[in-house]
Image (cartoon, rainbow, N blue to C red):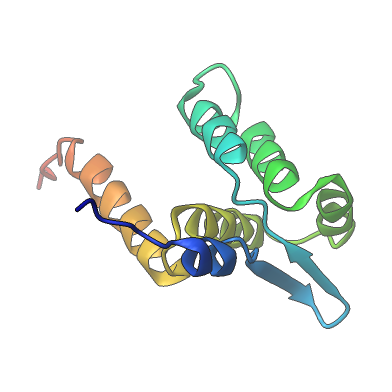
Length: 122
């Protein structure tokens, strides 16, 4: 007798989109589709696009053009943009924001360890 796997409920609950709340009046659904995941992977790996353009494209793909325009209108510090990008990446990877931030710190530490530390001359 063959097995039957009923994943209807799991797929149904998995199709509920996560949201990001920018402020009290602006909450956006995060697009976590496979196509957005593929697009973001390509963006992250593309060395021809500068970091600022990548951030804009990630935000637009993740939460939409209207959301990007609103976020830009807030004149936020760069750290806030990084937080929004991290939230989008966490949602797409189905992990917590803390896990994404931890991975970012680990990656940064690896990169910093690649530089030689010069000894000070006395």
